[in-house]
Image 1 (tube, rainbow, N blue to C red):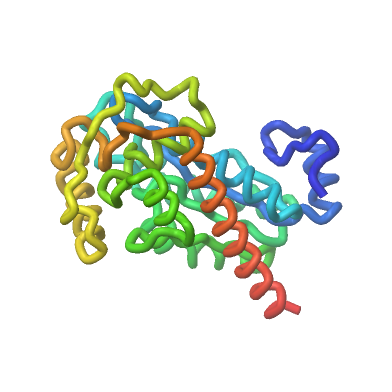
Image 2 (image 1 turned 90 degrees about the horizontal axis):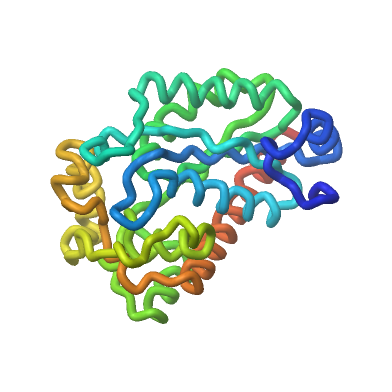
Length: 270
């Protein structure tokens, strides 16, 4: 059951309300790990943070037994630092902050903490560091992570792009049609479509067999080397309707994965 006024964001609740919610069965904490970094000339630097909130709030409402921790940011954005406004943590600092976020949440009675990366540059480090966090909290609660698959699109996403005549390269992986459309659905006031442009949108870059190489290349040489305007995709033609559909799919897929992981873990523990 959601709070009577509909709130699931912990930072909007008092400690009394949070304590009551956890005692009442809201014992899953959702923690999105975002970023503050450039998102092309048309999107705000807080894009990954805003979308992290939209995703985790939607998942919490779908689950019914979860609360949303404050989105962690900045993240690992060294590959975006050629663009003004980008903030980044060192990997060591990032891991320490993530650990302390989880240790704090683990003190308050949550049975499960679920990490969700809303910035691709965080994902590999989060996954590698997850066992250490889980071990540190093994006597307190369980720690999980929803692992993004950069090779595949979630069920239904391909159909949405086809509906709007958008190719995979146009959809992009950073500030393209997909991300821009979701921001139009969530925070249209922060999107300047007059500045929406085409960025890196060639087929080879996004081919399933090449996408991991493209990601590593961005870490080595920086996003500006790959795309002078900071867009990986094509933001032109983005629209809120498509964004709502894409976000709904992400929420549904993520909620299903969280239910699965938590259910399996609790069955093993019983």
